[in-house]
Length: 179
Image (cartoon, rainbow, N blue to C red; front, side, top):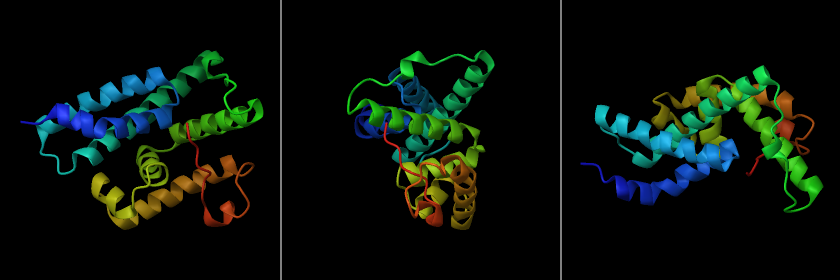
């Protein structure tokens, strides 16, 4: 029997941070959080899980990326302006606007990546997982993680060339975004 209360108490905050960091909206993050645990319940019924936290974070990342894709497809189709994304005056208006634009651009770019590339990029670059941890969780080789990460960065790099700090383009790093 799985101790869901213990898992939610122990790993829930990390799942929430992952969903909110990627989605940037409280309501979307709440729905993603619930979807993650429903998916986890189905996964646990099908097979034993070696690392519950890793499985939950992977599921949260996948659910968030799926939600981003739906959001951007709908926005393209409707041409709607997202008025709830207009920045509030927390730090300073120019700083907040720049951070919001960068977050929006990163979310949009991640939604455009192939699934495995987005998963690898999010787990390694946003969550700080090692190549070995990502490889184990996605059940691919460490070399495949490197290739997928390289391809993701190559697709993201031109989209962020105008905001990359000096020296970042030489290393292939994409600026980190906090939401």
